[in-house]
Every structure is written in C-alpha cells, then in structure tokens.
Image (cartoon, rainbow, N blue to C red; front, side):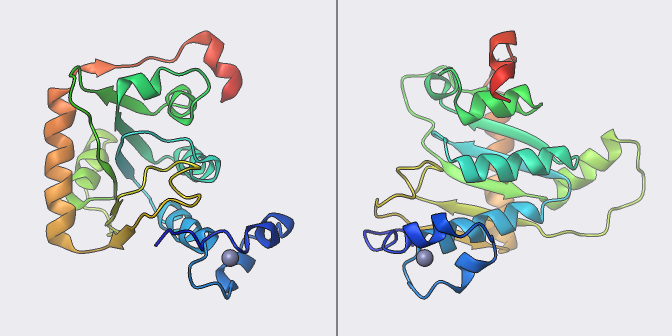
Length: 199
Ligand SMILES: [Zn+2]
C-alpha cells in the first residue's frame, strides 16, 4: 500500500545507504519497503520483463530495470507516447539501453500499470530466439500490478495499491493482453543520439 503515512521515515532511509536496512522499517505503511519489494521482484527476473505503464520516472526502479537488462533480461515497454517522448525520462533512457517500446496512436489512454516477469511461454520464445532448444528451468513468473504509476508521485503520498502475485491465471491474462497490444501498437521509438548522455 502507498498512502499518506508512507513517508514518515523517508529521511532515515535516505541517510542509510544499506539497501537491506529499509526492509526492517517499523512503519507498516513505509513506502520504501514497498518500493524495495518491487525491486527485489525485478531483481529475480532472468529472461524477460513486459511492462505496460502509463508513465514512469522512478529512479530506483529505473536502476533495477537497467541492471536487469545488463544481465541479459529482454525489456519491452508499452506506454503513452506523449510520456515517452519527453527528453531524459526513464523510458527514453531505457530505450537507449536497448529496451523496445510501443504505444497507441489514439485519443484514449494506455492507462495500465503492470509488469509481467518471466511468463512461461515468453521465456520459451526467448530461449528459442537465442537458439536454446531445451526447456528452461523455471523461473519466478509473476506480475506486479496496481493503481500506481512507477513515479515519484505515485510512490510519494498518493493513495495507491500494488499487488505482486504468482497467480498463473492472472499472469496468463495480462500476458495475453500485453501480446495483443504489442501487435496492435505499431508506433515504436528508436534511440536518438542526444539521449545517450542520459543512459
Ligand atoms: Zn520506512
């Protein structure tokens, strides 16, 4: 949960550079605890992350995704084009690091805030693309889904909820919708030279 009590302890966390320490925070509403749980989940990704996010500028989650890509995790992003085009945004920086991005050409909003990690069929697809014919050992398939955009504001006092679950029915439903959107949205952004300095 994210709520108005989540930031009572934030100055303590900012002073403490030890990442494991915030997990012991006694504030039951601690936003940092919740952010850390998302980071831990991203850290377990081995093959692929598919993210549909209206807007995204969290530095901490950007770092977690950047590290995932550095260890070979394939990242696909569906977002609102207007948000991605802003110079220096996290989405631009991820595109420059090799993430693929698509968005709708529509007046309606792509308003989802979910992320699918290592869904079984996607993992098999990626292994095939990489020339591995044997079925991979699975794998921590899960989804992160909720009301919050992964933004400073989303985690910074808004009333929001995020659920992390390994429920297979929910994983399959969201993956199917992600795949459907990925095919339907043809707009895709390419990295530009100016943006490389932000990467
Ligand atoms: Zn705390």
